[in-house]
Image 1 (cartoon, rainbow, N blue to C red):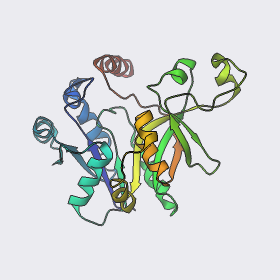
Image 2 (image 1 turned 120 degrees about the vertical axis):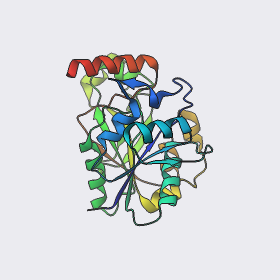
Image 3 (image 1 turned 180 degrees about the horizontal axis):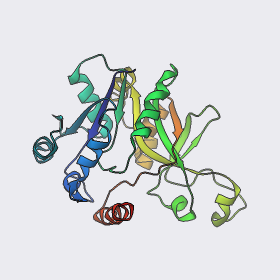
Image 4 (image 1 turned 60 degrees about the vertical axis):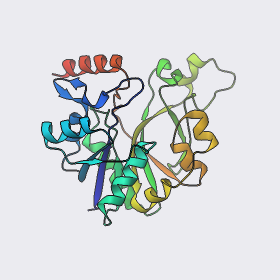
Length: 248
């Protein structure tokens, strides 16, 4: 069994939804849903730079919390800081976003198992795109892979482009995949990722995984049938509440 560190980055100062981790879903903070879903999968830690989140998590649901630097530019940077401060011994670090209340334990298990292959440096997930609306939305990140399962590229644009066919017919001609943004890193690789500067591809698409690809790292992409519902706006939260009510 690999020694696994699960980090839940949680920022209060979201541009589109300030205070998002503490917004209530089904009467519980969003970040609590994530915390509860990762229990038993490894050593879990909420990483935040805001005392309000730290206090709510420790007092409200007895979570382990680490205060991380306000200078962290991404969830990956927060994971790297937690790894450095927790010390060695971890083989795999999993980055589970604090706004993914419907993620499944099996997804984390799938990612950790990927590191049975010594060639895997980073692992993430994808799921089939079912509608043209999903395909064309820039909010859904698309991924294309090589035959060995490693990512070739991630984009907010539909990939691949199908020359000579209207966009409405693209799904009928082949499979398209949406990236599910849970990452796992081999511990020593994570340390190196946190030293990389922002690259031109990342700056263009606003996708940090392009920084890693451009630097020559490989990302193994695994399939999941479960399309997580991320919460980026108050409207997303209202829709998540409706989803929760339908499943009761």
